[in-house]
Length: 391
Image (cartoon, rainbow, N blue to C red):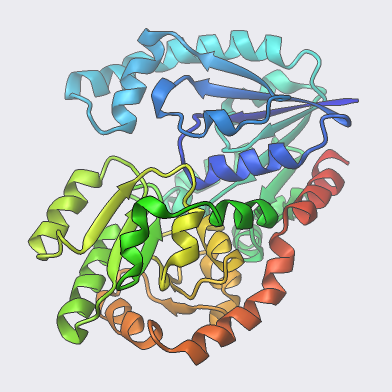
């Protein structure tokens, strides 16, 4: 029986963490001894902790308050300048010492190390004799803002892994075009979900939010972090559509994150406080998805946005920004959803008005989506993972 060690920096409620948990849940514990190391113990911020399968052996690298408290504050953007300097300048060497010590113990009986968010790149020298795998969740240019020096450093680190997993064909092409030396160890595996489980969760009672069905509602979901997401565009586009076209549907935003206060202020500024509903983190967002008139996705960059796969699996009509990598491939370049440029508020407004009640267009998108959804099934992903990664 092979022993697999997965690693992530933290366990927040983001797409990376959700996909990791889906993969862990899809692996057969009768075939593998599965470990998960999490760099930072963030306590009550770990909203997905309870979803880790019970057969997974979980270990934290940094689990003392002095090593994690300022990280918690940084994640929630509730950090003072002295605390930020302490986190960024003082703690790193101490954190590295703890990482080295604990990783040496963790990997003793491990056959394959899966660096799921590429935060172990600085420790690959410890893994001699072990198969090393890295997952890339974003395109190269957006990982490092296009800085050639950082890109070169990033590529050099990836060459230390035996296998590098890209989440879509566009990401893979982008990486190999920039760094041909990565060609031989780069593969593509789509993120995938347990569609049967999503359908079951979507059918759970919607009683508390039943009032939303009166006029219908549009839905967006994700971590409220404007560095990557663009809920600002979403709110402005929605507000513009309300004002120009007098649409009745409300806008529901499911998710939590450090930008919440700013986004609430924006909704108030746009005079939409009574129409934009911040539903907070929801352990079951699928019952919200099932009933929405449109699913709206506004992001600046992604790797392979899981939330679009979820919306497709529930047959929701989608309007999405054509982010660098992921969104266009999922929506088959416009065959199963409307695509607009990132940041284009007027295009979002007009697209909402065009698609919200166009049942013929919505049905065409649903029919076309059946083709791509076959590639995003969890059983397909697990087979590919076992074949290409574990070997």
